[in-house]
Structures are given as structure tokens and as C-alpha cells.
Length: 435
Image (cartoon, helix red, strand yellow):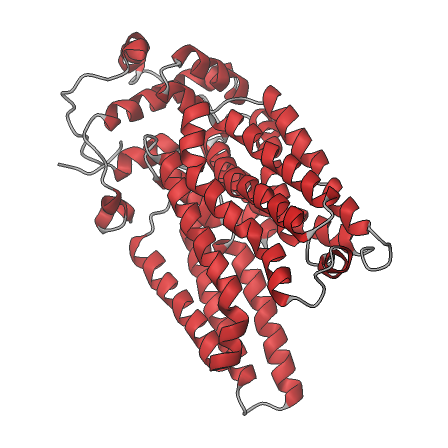
């Protein structure tokens, strides 16, 4: 790495099956030169297929928004807020379970098979929800769907980061967020007829089987992650996948970088705590354009700063100072600003950044842990928001949210490293502890 001290590695490389390949490429390392930017068109179809998992995540997150009233009438639990809350939140419990095991599944069977596996509970769960005659069948279906929701986006973010050329990885990474938004919009569009057509809510669940089946089918023809194949000792297959994703002229360079990173793994165990201190951790569409232009760090800083301002507007709007008309505009403007600034950075960037900064040995499992924490927090925010709003009031609640956003600004400023334009191997080598 340019401008950095490289640790001398004395231990033997553990993957005996790939030893000859690594030695061969290691000798060529200094002579290999990058021939130019590999075509993003080669990897784009594989990325688009993977983002179907995120589309399904968004769809199932929003499918009960417009249909809940019809569901409660048909399944005879109308008027029970507890039952309605369970229909909405049961999938979040399933998502926690799915994300918790996503790392082990992705490392065990590969990224491609893991994405196919996430489609299976979504097909089963959506079918159960669509065909059920009672509340318990709906809850069980939502639980199945939730496991797929937890598994899919985590593996999709991992897969996209590993198959994308470094110069468009940010753009491709934001596709997952855009796909989630499209899924949410799709569910809202489908649900518009739920109140006017008896039983339409069942069609809203049935239609989600189609993209889930497409995900399972099309991933069969998509590339496997070369990073996972190399880590598994399947070096010949890793080269073949690089050929499919990058083109022949860039395979040697990509393989040399991967070999260099693998040798760095033997320098010693990477402690998780070392990623969070010191110099080692130094609108979705707009984010897609800007992520590879401005960088991840700038978008996060701008996003969290904008969210602080939006919470400030909410606090002022909830106070006694403005008139009712002014309070309405402050509240509406604050919410719109929050949604906009969230979609620019805090929404799409973290999942991509996490998939970039973790070493390849622990990348999938670390992503699983982080996404599990995300789902736990998401569950409690959804569960407690309205009761807290009633108990402590809007001013204190929004002030608390604003304080957390401000803490995030400070954290990003002090600790987050910029990964724009760097290969996963360059990022990993840069974050290795120097002895």
C-alpha cells in the first residue's frame, strides 16, 4: 500500500489448495498494472438481481399499511390494537432471526445460495398469509416472511460490495436502498384497492411471490462472489467469476489484489475493537449519484446534520411559540427534511460501509451481528414511539432523537474512514493493525 508500512509476514498461507496460485500471482504483483476501469455493465445484471431481495424487504414492510383494516375485518380481529400491532411487528421478530444467522449462512453456502434461500421463506410466508383463514395463520406467515427479510438485505449488501468494481461500488450499493423504496411504493400502490375490493388484501400478498420466485431463479444464473470462492479455496472458480464480472483484461489485477489481502489475513487476528478507534477506523437517487463522487463520509455527515436540523424544526413546531399554521408548516417541513436527508446518507450508506470495512474473514458474520442490532432497535422504536409520545410529549421525544443524530455527527467526524474509490482489499489492508 502506498505511503503505509507493510507488516512482514512470516506465517505460511493456510489455504494449501491455492498456494501455487498465490505464489504465481505474488511474483507478478509488481508487474501487474491496472488496465483501466472495468466495464460496470458486466456486473450490473448480477447486482440488479440481488437487489430483488431489498425490493421484497420494502414490499413486505409496507404491505400491511393499506390492507390492515381489511385483514382485521376478514380475520375477525378488528378493534384489537394488540392483534393489529402483532400483524405489523411479527415480521420484525422474524427479521431479527434471519439477520442473526445471515452471516453463517452466507459463509456456509455462499452469497448466491444465501440469496436463493432468503426467497424460500418469503414465498412460503406470503402464500400462508394470502391463504389464511385466521389470525394465527397470518402471524405465522409474517414470521416466515420476516426471516427472509432479515436474511436478504444483509446478504444483498455483502454480495453487491463484493461483485462491484470499486469505482461504482457506492452507486451500486445505493441500488439496495432504491430497491427497498420501490418495494415500499409498490406495496402502497397495490394496497390502494384494498378498501374498495373485498379480499383484495390477499392479492397483495400473492403478488409478492413473483419477485421472490424470480430472485430464486435468476440467482442461479448470476455470478458467485469471487471473494467467497477464494476464501473457500476455490481459486479457479474465483478467477472464472472475475472474468464474468470484470472482463479478461482486469482479472489478473483483481486476483493479485485478492491474494495480497489473503496474505494480510495471516498477519494476526483482527480485533473488532480495533475497527472503532484510532487511525484504523479513521433522496436515494441523489445518494446513488453522489456516493462515488463526494464519498461515504461526507454524505453521512450531511445526512445526520440535516436530521439534527429537522428534529429542531419538529421541537419548535411542538412548542407554544408558533401559531397553529406555523406549527403545521414547521412539523411538515421538518418531517420532509428528515426523510430527504435520511435517504441521502443514513439510509443507504451504513449497509454499504459495513460491507466495506470488515475484513473478509469476518465480513458476513459481522454484517449479521450489525443487522441484528439494527432490527432490535427498529423493533423497539416502532413499539415505543407512540407510548413515549403520549407520556413525555413531542418536544422531549424529538429532542432525544436530535441528540442521537448529533452524537452520530461527532462519531462520523472522529472515527469513520473514507472508502470511496478503494478496492475491498485496499480497505482491508489499510485497517489491519500495524505492529
